[in-house]
Length: 313
Image (cartoon, rainbow, N blue to C red; front, side):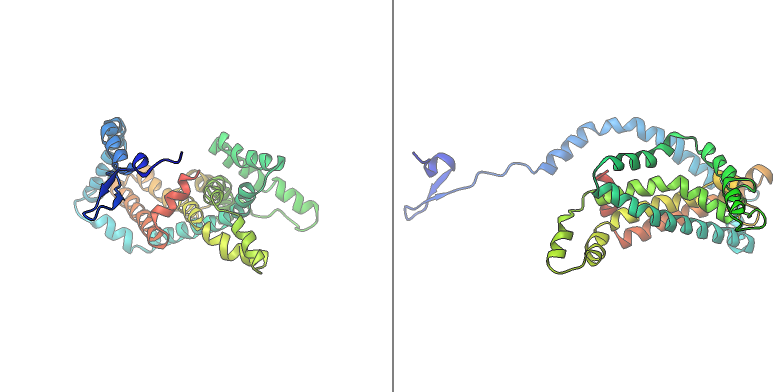
């Protein structure tokens, strides 16, 4: 026998004698329960917050005080850093190298991430191994490896001279080219992982639907897949660009004196010239620039979409 209305829902009678169903009171929303749970277990974050304040906030405050008190109180360090042409040149070099590294990493990482996100088979596992193996190798070892490869007696120069393409060894080391190559090699896996996280959640059947409606595969890819992968592109670009802005080891080992970056300039001010105030002010200017990059990314894409791409990983 079919269930009656009274068996499945509460009922009420109108003044005219008509039977109507009434809905039970709604339960508290899932987000309310989640918020209550977060408040109940929020104290578990206290050790992390204390460690964060001790190892990050406190040194940052001390660095800010040093930047406005050494060698004399005032904003003289910031004024000199923002008005001296040499410092402007160093910042311009840093931005150019960081932008170049980001673009090259994106050009190499996008097709790699696309293959990892859409293809299946044995070769995908091999490709994943090639992407992840560098994480298990010391950064210093990887940088020294490029010194051997790009040196005047390195593999590349031996091949070029062996093929008769050059009469002498090429100057591939201790310049902007070697810095870019080394930093791309080190930061490329981060770009690939961010792109993969953004691409993995894209429904590839949308491309098939577009092709069935008359779009060419290339047009469907550009008009559908690329816009949907934008959060992964932005998140990967942010990580690579900001990391490149403050990189130290690779520019120090592979770069030359004509292409000094901000991290090397800060090290020189502190460890060689003992000018802590100028070094601290340069570090804070770099920090403000980094925050500006984050704000621009938020205006263009939005942190919710960027973090959503990262959440898929």
